[in-house]
Length: 160
Image (cartoon, rainbow, N blue to C red; front, side, top):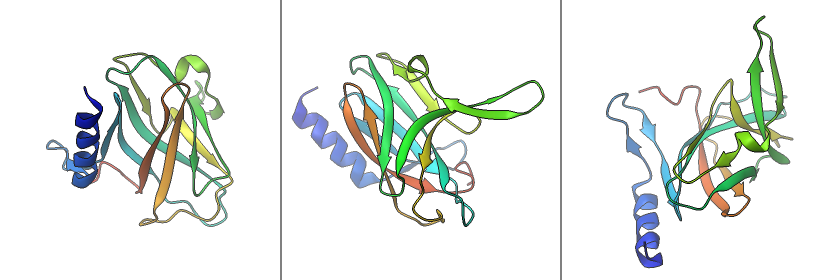
């Protein structure tokens, strides 16, 4: 795909903003950047006094070289690190730093960052996150560089 066609595709996607999933009625946001596709970035509102939040989204490597998600940057966080939530047999959850194998995106693969699993942890939140907030997130990749997305703030991204 030529750069001109790719640039036109990205501009068209940006102009469209979002589309609707016909099965659920839920709004979905999609951004393609040089063979990497980012879908549905979202986070929940946070209560007052909470200094952490989690970002969720999907990343698909359509035809870009193999890569790895390193983390992110946000206008609202001191740092953004990949974490994974694990729940043991006693329903006790613990959060650990995700390892390289969990963050690898080979050509043709998808990486789902979701509640109770792999996610990006915003540490040092500057203020509580509220519905309607504008949250910018840059995803940082080992080879691809960065992809900037706008994160939707919602209790339930699948609500109609």
